[in-house]
Image 1 (tube, rainbow, N blue to C red):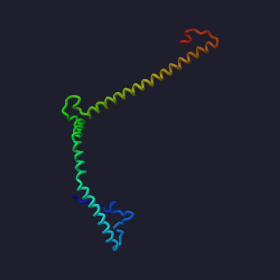
Image 2: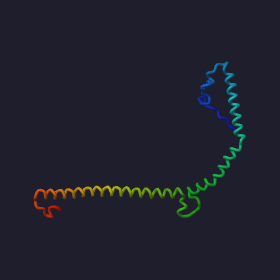
Image 3: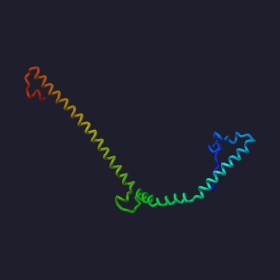
Image 4: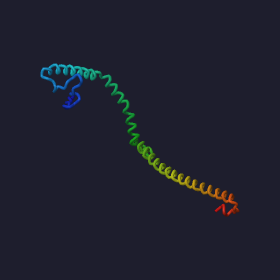
Length: 156
C-alpha cells in the first residue's frame, strides 16, 4: 500500500470551522490537537479496513465487469471491422457510418441546390404574375379610355 503525502496547501490540512490549522496553534494546544487527529486517523483506518475486508462488494463488482467483457469485445470487433468478414461487413460499424455520412453530405448538398433552384423559380413566377397583372390592368385601362383594343396591343 502506498502513502500519499499531501501538499502544504491541501484542503485536508486547511482549517475547517471547528479545526484550526496546525501552524496557528500555540505549543500548549498542540497535544490536544494531535490527540484529536490521531482519533480521526484511527476511525478512518478502521473504516478503510472494514471496506477492504468486505470482499463481497469487490467480488460482485468484479463479476459484473467480467460478465460485460464479452459484450465489450463484440462491440470493439464490430466498430473496428476485425470480425473477419469480407465485403461490406469488413468495414465495421465505423466505416459504414462514415459511408452513410458521406452520402448524407452529398444529398444535403443536392437538397441545398434544389432549394436554391426552387427559390429562383418562385421569384420568376412572381415576376411573371406581376407582368400578367400589369397587362390585364393595361387592357382594362385601354378599355376605359375608349380606345379600340386590338389583339396585338393587349398581347404585346
